Length: 155
Image (tube, rainbow, N blue to C red; front, side, top):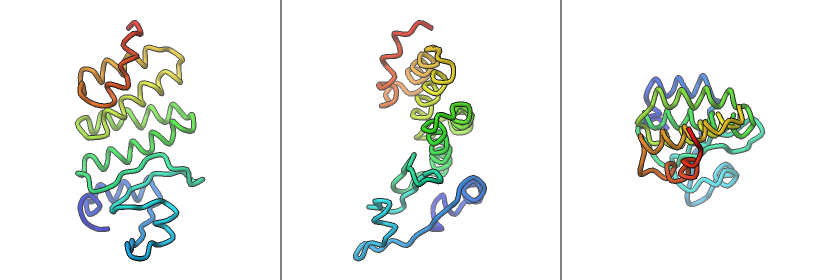
């Protein structure tokens, strides 16, 4: 795929330097093995998985360039988070929130960032920070609603 955000230099550079890209043809009348293996039902589909093949993040359909770059960072952040590498998760998710503050994945990144801060320190203030940040910056988001229980934590 060489259209949309995939055609932009900064996207290509990020993918080539931070990921191992795999590109596959999709044929809807005769699904390929890759389509079956990765449950591809629409294109484009971006999957971030680790070396063991465990999927950590998926994006289906075209997204604007800023959102696409943020999704790549979110995928890496969630991969680190899921592997209990909280320092790496915090680094990746912080970079996302600073470099792509208005991107679609930003609220999810804030949520995971707060939880990663909690897991790293066992201080619930990370969870409260996530709630406060989501409530102020993304008040109508699903992630703000998910963080609502954290408003009970004193700041």
